[in-house]
Each structure stands twice: as C-alpha cells, then as structure tokens.
Length: 428
Image 1 (cartoon, rainbow, N blue to C red):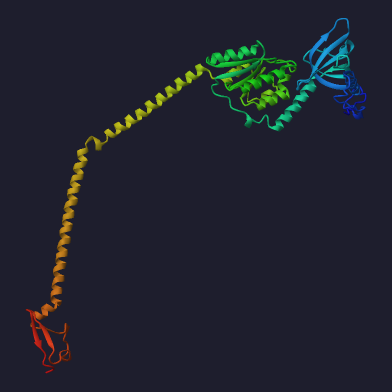
Image 2 (image 1 turned 60 degrees about the vertical axis):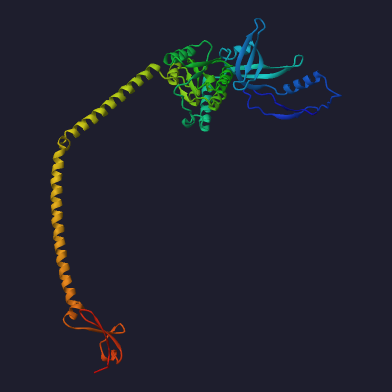
C-alpha cells in the first residue's frame, strides 16, 4: 500500500497562505501475512506530520492550564464551528509576547509546528507565536457573514413564520440559573398562568455555546408539543455574544420548523440571530410579552367587546322602536277606515262610469245591427221575390237565357212562398 503526503515548506512569521508540494513516501507493501509494526506506522505518521512545517491556525481556547515552575502552558484549541479540537503547548514567553492577556473562550491565531509524539501516538501543536483575534476583525467577519446570509435570503421577512397566538408549551434555551430564564418564565406565568415550559439550560457563552445551543434547538424542534422556541440571554459584551452570530447556529435556526424568538441582551445588542429568527425581542421580558397574551388584558378586551356589542344591539333596537312608532303615528294606520271609505267611493264611481260606458256601447252596437239588417234585407233576393219575381233553375243552375232551358228540360221555379216544378217547351 503506497502512501502519498503533502509537504509544506517552512512558513515565514507572517506565513500564510502556504505553498504546498507533493512528496511521495516510500510505498509499504503490507498484507495480513506480512503486517508492519505499530512503530513503523507511527514513525511514518510522524514523518508526514513533520513535513508540514510551521502553520498558522485559528481557533477558540476551551482550556488553558499553566504548570507552575515548568514554564509550559497547555491549551486546547477548538474549531468554532466544527466539533474538532487540538492540544497546543507553548512556553510562558510565547504567552507573554501575545500583546494582550490570553484567557479561556478567546479566539486566537497561532503559529505552530505540528508534532506527533510517537511513544503515545498523540498529535500536538508546538506554538511559537500566539495572538488574539482583534475585535475589529471579528466584527468584519460578522459583517461578511451577514452579507452572505442576506444574499441567501435567510433574513427575508417572507420566510419568517408567525408566532402562535396562545402557545401551549414554550421551549426556552437559556443559561443555567440565569436571570433571563427567570424573566421569561415569571413574566409568561404572570401574563398567562396556564402556559407550560420545556427549559434547556446550556452554555450561552464560551467555546461550547454554539454546540449546546444548536443541540438544544434541534431537540426542542423535534418535540411536537413545543409551539415556539425562545433563545434568551441577558446581554453582554461583543465577545460574549459571538456564539449568537455563529454561522452553524444561524443555519440551525433557519432550518427549524418551529418559530424561533431571539431575546439576546438589550436594545443595543444586535447579533445576527436577531435577523434570522422569526421574531426579535429587545429583552427576555419583551420576549415574554410577545409570545403569550396578557390574561387580564384579554379579559378586559372581552368585557369591552361585550359592552360594545350590547351598545350596538341596544342602539339597533332603539332605532327599530322609533321606526315602528313612526309607522303607528302615520294617518293610514291611525284611521285605516278613512282610506277604505275613500277608496270605496272611488270604486263606486268607477263602477257607474263602467256601466254607462257599457250601456252606451251596447246601444251603439244595437243601432249598427239594425242598420246592417235593414241593408241586408234590402239587398236580399227574398225581398225581390216578395215583389212577384221568381228564380228559374235547371240542373241546379240559374236560367239566364232561353238556351239554358231547351225544350223538355225540367225546371225548378222558386217563388217567395215556395217552389214549382215545370217543363220547358223551348224558346217562344
């Protein structure tokens, strides 16, 4: 099995970025029948680590131990985002040359040489220079992270979830025995005594704050009974509030399905958590006011609404009573028979006029019938027959010419009083 490592040349004091080069280590041919001793593996690891040379690295000090009389200081340097740490040793002179006191929880930049201690198989960094990360640089990094998250839309108001009107259970993330916890719990209980809490006490500053707060947030988010999560802390310096501007924590808050309220510090404190959270409270007390309603205020509102509803109803009934009274006072309702009498005389007059009109129409129609009958009678053939005339028919046709009744033709003579049969003797 061949091993390939990267060798890093000696870095200058201001040494990064570093140039790297690939250097091959003699390949090892191993198998289950021909293994290599542990010492050989440890020696090769030490050779590979030794080729790294001096490197600059940044991290957060989680533990600092001084051994009196030895002049050596032991540090545990932890990555601020990932759960990774390394042991660092440095001399007292290196600590004194840092330019500022070095303490636990502080972010530092170290120039160190990685060393692998073969007998125990441990990796340490032998620090040659150490310097704290300045406040200005921290703020610049926070500003850069703010721009990145803003570009990704994590601050967009459209993605923020509304807080429930009356949460049944509140998830609270706070320091152990902190004033922020008392402020949130007491004010919530005072405003709504029936509210319940699930409290996660974690480190809210220092090297473990990001991990513990993120784990507590995920645990509360998985609890189906928790309706809203509050992350509370009672203010502090910029360095103390750095965990609440950490990218890992901010992305955990953005991924939470439960609404999150940020209650970090006071009005002037503004970690990036305030921008990612669904709601921002200026203080833990303000968070309590935002997440639960005041029972006394709600009772007053109910009383006010009932009073307003009663007033509106009474006003409506009063208007209807006045309308009914105005209807009763109208003349048509005060003396309804008067209008009926007036209408009765109108009906009688209309009936008389209708009768007169109909009689007149009948008289005119009777005269027209008589005149028409007289004209019909004057024009009727029967009137002519009454004067002595007769109508001669042959074969159902009227005879108008002698040729229409030849000799021997049977004739029908119609008179005014009846009919006579005759036989034609021809033209005379």
